[in-house]
Length: 256
Ligand code: MG
Image 1 (cartoon, helix red, strand yellow):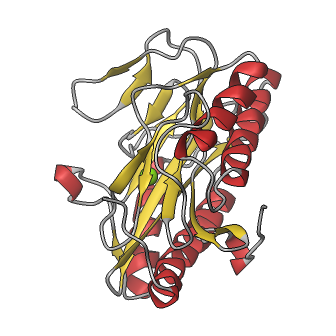
Image 2: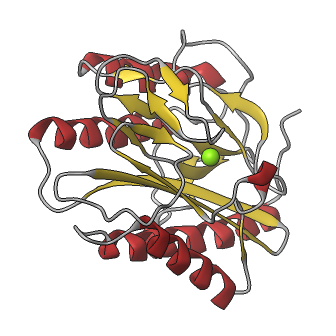
């Protein structure tokens, strides 16, 4: 069942997401060759606590860390590690917050120093595809219009969209209905309504879309060993169209 939120509830979801956005923006500036992702994890947890919030992922179904740190061929759910980042890596950081009864969830992929052209292009297309999806989150639209827009943009650029992991509703639970695939034909699924809040999160592979899960039970990697990128925003559907709740600077840019 898809839960419709009141404007008051959306304000709380926004507050959590603003904290996520601020944290990710802060971490992004810390990413450079020689820095390790356990340090980033520590910073994120500290920022959450200083803001009377809880990192949402730590302990979620046993996940041991505050951030997911997925380097290069890791797709999502990578464990922060003491291995220093290297020039030319790409790092996906996913972070969630629980505060005042509501969740925030967002992710981005950042370059470590100077990166290769293919990695740059992969990141650019992945982020663009997120916005293409968000633009379709309008009242009376259909859920799979979002999915289709993402897939079209990604495949049009010659990349592959991951099938196995999907976006989700978000609110007083981290993962609510509906599941939001990043692929599919348009015109299917639920009819979108004002008050729905979604975490939309394309995961894009450089080559094939197949993935494997490592022995730690969490880390998702590309089956072929090539690169992967991930961007995510939490949005609310309003009468006027989608509003990004996890946009840094609190911008309420409406895409309609
Ligand atoms: Mg998510």
